[in-house]
Image (cartoon, rainbow, N blue to C red):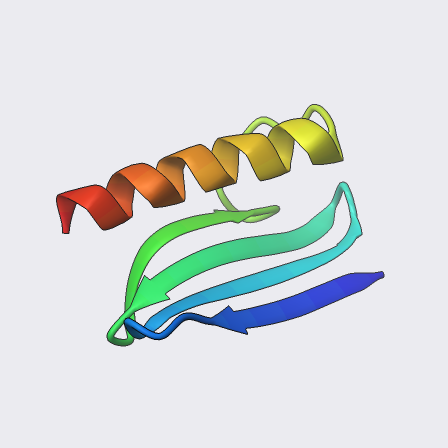
Length: 67
């Protein structure tokens, strides 16, 4: 199991939880507002941990640049 929370100086929060390919959640929040979430409950097509992390980081970066 892997679990991590990272809070950046500008109020961005990353929550990362991975237990298995059927139990995971990666979320990016800013000011309490959810910007991006990948989880086993979402429509994300899980292929590998590496791809999951890469796709999440790319989408979180895009969301932070837009907002």
